[in-house]
Length: 369
Image (tube, rainbow, N blue to C red; front, side, top):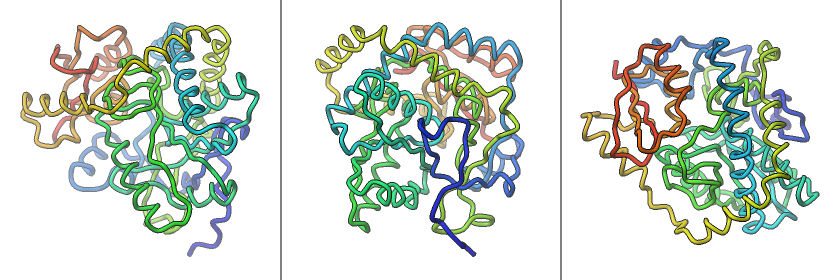
């Protein structure tokens, strides 16, 4: 039985001044499931959150590609971080702002936004990372904990990028459910670095470009796994779970990533202002343009389940790292740098097909087993 849920477990390779994970370390209980077996279980009806995939361990060429990509895109990431951070400041102010990133893709982005605000405005904004699971909602215990620590919290949710917009939709529903049963209220607005799906109003860019933190798994996200909700070895009412991969500390690049991008903040202020002015001229209302592309792909390739379609660079990378891919669609009109996609596809013998009728640079299709 649950004994105490007063505090989350201390976990992750970031400093506590960067982020506090509101998670329960279930590494001693959960065993990673091999990709093929996990895919079969998911397609057979087991919820993806009930098990962990085996962590992909990249070879030296792929690690070199990550470092090259980081060097190439650090400035572009810094601009997008600045654009998102400035919008968050305008929207929420800084006095009661609490950044809440969605583990795990949102975590490094949340760290960067916190560092940007600290560097530019000399304000230390609290930052937590919590779990949200498609079909299961948000970790309400984590939200309660935040309000216990910050009674007047103005929560701003943060994620890395959008695909079809499933998490944005999940977040909206979860916030409605939470607000219906709690005195404290939360706003479902989601801030992301890249919004190629046109699903949110706070974004750094709507270009579908490579965010280096999408290239890797836990080793670029504080050595924390994707989140787990499985009551066979977890207590109801406790924090959602995750595994802390301490054994991967020698290959961890989480802090290298955020340090490298932060180093560019002072150099990109004029670009941030230009990008903000450009965004102000855009129609920020979500058009869900990406979902229209997904529906076309579903029809064109006769795919029964839309969950088998994972659009955008970030989601395509995830398909190649931890699912069983059928094929990868690439839009040569929008593809500016998909070297890591090509490398992973070649490594796993996954066919690549050109497809121009989508708003994304690429899309991963999962194999139906």
